Length: 291
Ligand SMILES: [Zn+2]
Picture 1: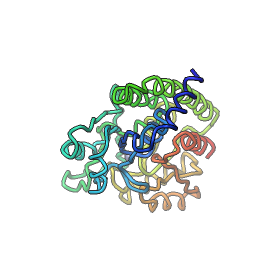
Picture 2: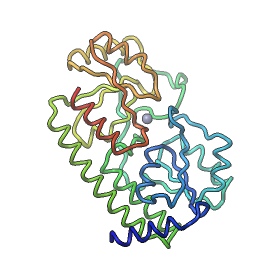
Picture 3: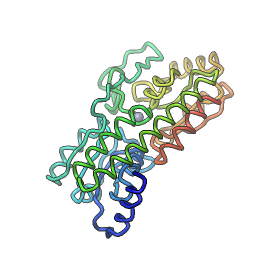
Picture 4: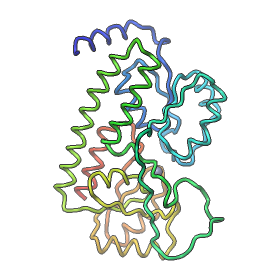
């Protein structure tokens, strides 16, 4: 198999760059997944640029033009994609849209009522994920990534059957690494006395469920907490003796800083959208466990 891979890579090196298949993904971690399977046989465009929030992103005209050249769109299953996908289909009739969340049983976004006030429906400034909505953050659990990687590999093999064995071999290698990462994170989180972590945007629901730790969201139904809710969070952080409050680069860190200041905790950034997925997910596990 190894010889086969080396042979395939040699063939690949001989293929001119314009022969690369173009594909698109929604978020940077998916680019990482596709590249583990396809190597440089494909050129991967990422819809949501660094620093942007995928739940409220709108494709730029240049990206729509790039999509006209693409063969596959790997959707992650975020509600925001629904608005784009029909547009994508209209700029490129040959674009195959692959739902990489296929077969994944979604968790619900946690109901984070920190207070008891009722929110009127008309004050919803964005409709990404309220309580009761399916949690879209499926790429932050290594076990669920095994399933997404399989969907990606199948789609690549179907679009490019000549390289079927190459994709299958890479999928096999990546799956083994994901299993090892899952074991590592389980070991890191089990060894830790700390089983709770507070984070602004609740991106880590699947991660927390997998490793039996508890995510406490600062954000309330996709919005910043009101003063009473903030006070309650400060209380919780004190009671739980949290030494770290987590922020994420795509969201405001104002409330996180307030909680940290009131409780003597530090603010640490964890990024659910980092492209270097393998390094990042281990670092996040360590940051949560060792706080
Ligand atoms: Zn999110």
